[in-house]
Amino acid sequence: MEITNPVGGKTNTTLNSIGDNYWLEQPYGILGNYNYVVSAVDIVSRWAIGSGSFSIVDTVFPIADAGPDQDVTWATVVIFDGSGSWDNFGISSYMWTFNDQGLVTLTGVSPSYQFFNPGTFVVTLTVTDYSSNSDTDTMNVTVRDITPPRITNVSATPSPQNIGGFIDIKATVRDNVGVAGVWIRITDPYGFPSNVSMPQIGVDEYSLMQSYSVLGTYSFEISATDSSNNWNKSSGIFEIKDLVAPIFISVSALPNPQEILYSVQISANIQDNIGVLETWVEITEPDLSFAGNFSMTYDSGQGIWRRNFLTSQLGLHYYTVFARDPAGNWNNSNGQFFVQDTTPPTIRPSTSLLRMEVDVPFNFTAMASDNFRIDEVFAELESPTSQIDNYSMNYGVGIGTNYYLILTLSELGDYQVNLSVKDIAGNWGIATAVITVVDSYPPTAEAGPDQYVTEGDLVQFDGSGSTDSHAIESYEWRFVEDSQQRILYGPRPVYTYSTAGTYDVTLIVTDYAGGSDSDSLRVFVNPKTTGDGDDDQKGLWDTIVNDVLIHYYWIIILLMTVLIVLIVSVAAKRRSDKKKARARAAARARQRARMEAEAQAHEVPPPPDDELPPPPSEEDFAPPPPPPT
Image (cartoon, rainbow, N blue to C red; front, side):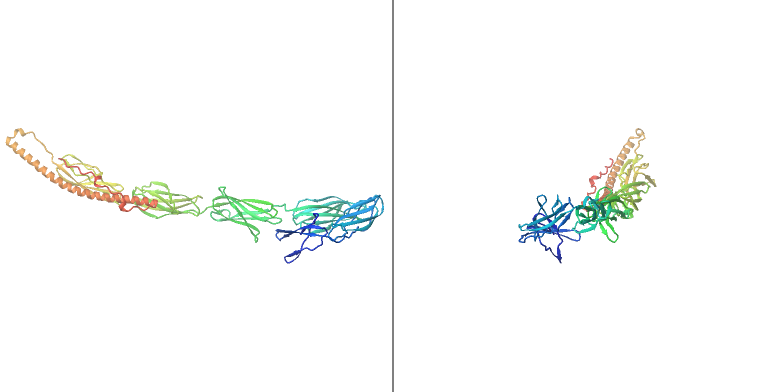
């Protein structure tokens, strides 16, 4: 409790206690209003305060005590001592009166005076309390040659000093007769005093060197006495602080290197003369971004501060560990650790054996995964003719680790697919697959319209209207002439018939997958008409007969030609209808295959058949040419 009296004086006193109840019971020597402040501290140095006030009145007369008689050396300053005077609340004034070449009046509890003349002097002390109550007492001063010791050059170094360090308190003490002893009273920051004798270290030099373990401001008072029992005092202060920052014995980050997405444990062995109050670590990512400021936990069993950090970036990380002691001293230590990725990614095709239509787009997919992050996925295709193409596969957003590649393959046979995936750490994974390209749709043969020629004319066959989903490998034209099987090759061969007649010609087209189709046409070869130039030598009858026979012959040919044209037209119309139906079916199948492949690439279902565009209509095919007249 700190009590402030009415005149501003302060006292500090430790309270008495029973359990949680604390009190102070004592008399007060000053009249008026007193203020008090109660301060409490717990074992971890946390404080609380409370305050109040009270008033003191006085009806009791003081008791004056001028002190004992004194025997002093002449020319020595006499110090009067009225401190033995008493009052129940306090003395407001001390007045000392005596005669020394006249009336001398001194005031104060311990005034000093140097007598001019030796002798015995009767000194009267009048004390008055704050209620003007007074009392007197006398003492005799015998003036002799008495000189008290003199204390100079008082110092306490170094100040401030680190806790646990040594303070050297020195003073020079001299006396005209001789110093009998020197003592020092040291009061710590909590008000606890200690009295020790100061050793003499030289002529008139005294020193006390010792260490101090309590932080705060210390006060001290040096007292000296001579052989005549004369005393003197001198005081001073010094300060004890914690000036030493925490010391890092070691810092580490283990394991180093560490795999990505695993934790690194950052540890620090730190010592301090008082103790470490708090520790934390700041971590910087490899891209120089700030990962965070993380508090560390003390492992009392190992005496180590620790923090686990979950890695999320590849590369060199930097960290700084900070430590602070209770006095606010700071220190730090730096380190680094490396995060790597040694786990290769994996990749596998959706199917290792794939069968696809030639020239039809399809979606080739593969599943790739990595413990951290995939950088690129590649596909190398080697065609059946050993042609190699490289592709970068696309990432299927929204479907996990599915990568796709839309391919349209134009060679029949087996394609070797070499898949490779690379993660951002440069690790590779590989897989293989085989794509077998087939042609499941046979070609559609188109031999062209029937042809009408004259014996000896050149016939131009045209099968270029034949179609296939991929490509036609061969064209064969088969017919019989003069009881001999004739075979022509190529899409547009030519031939000259040497004999008039009607010839059925069959075109057989074969694609590279072995699929085939056939179509037929007829070639009508008319006989060649000739004249010999002897008509003028025949008779009139022969001329008439010949003319009639010739006209009859042409009439017959014309009638037969009209009949044949009608029959051929009907047959050609039926063949044309069949070919158109097959063409529409093949076109619809190819169109649906393309749309299914595109839908698979974009995850959109193909439309139903009734929403497909219509196949070619009859208007898309030209009508057969009319027969020659």
